[in-house]
Image (tube, rainbow, N blue to C red; front, side, top):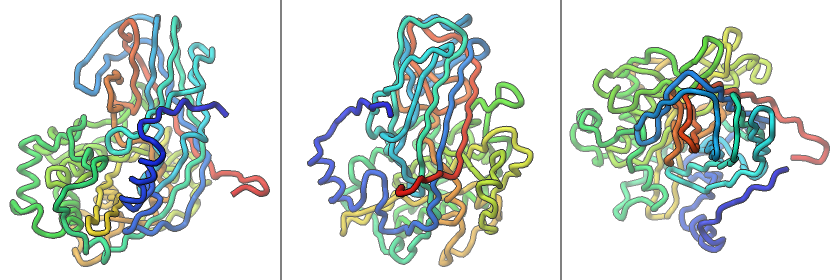
Length: 413
């Protein structure tokens, strides 16, 4: 297995202190508000295939670049997500195998692993030099465990707003992020209207639940969640961002999640989007998830899908300042809206808010539509980015996702 050149930013003793002080591991395996159930183990594969010609490029800062011609790079750096898990999944990037190829020639199999960026994002960096051709491919393979989760609403409701703020690494999820424009005037007006100008009156869990309910009632999902370069190619995520859809209250699944995350941040609740894929709704998915829970069955038909179903949901952070512990709470707002356009009673548990059995077949990939760095991404955000010399030409891209139930040999767990 390739060795990862891990960049160590903190000493082991500091990491241990942080883990104990905040009551959970870096992967979120210990969450005082969630109970993980029915683990599903998957062998996963992601591929990013890039072909010269066809589109402009866009960076996380919003700057667009354009060029034409074949690939002819003196230097290239590829950045792609390699997270350690989410509220509903766990994985170890050190166990992943990766390979970057250019015209079928292996360029890099030992990515530099950059630890947590904003909102626990973690990325791998692959590099190459003096490359010419028309096709580049990055393949990432590794095991992932997903879970159904159940929320302990009594414990969650008992948490009050912290008087001294959130832990530093969590507070970063209150900061600006591409597509989550929490400080946009329309987003702020929406949040104030939904909370009656008192976002931090009730406990934070109840505020988050009420805001999700308002989104469920007032946002109209429309269009598709993916962008395609050709009818059978999955080319990225269709997302305009919170600021745009806050005005029209209509958009894709990713727009809906972006707006909810932005409203949470505007209210003072740390939040992040989670982008992943739905095994049950993807081609052949019924073979691997033959009987998903009826209450949260896949909202897509795997028999007519031509590519993996990309999903976007939200997680917000609940922090118990008294006990110095916290955890991420998942909200599948799009699934909630597909089930009903009416807010449920706040005193009841909602399927999709804080839990549900359907999370056990959702495999998370990243917490950003564009990597949180200076890299340039394609016109349709596709979760990866690059830096090149000279500037990159216009491209076509194809993303491929596969997951199969893990086969364990004797003695393995």
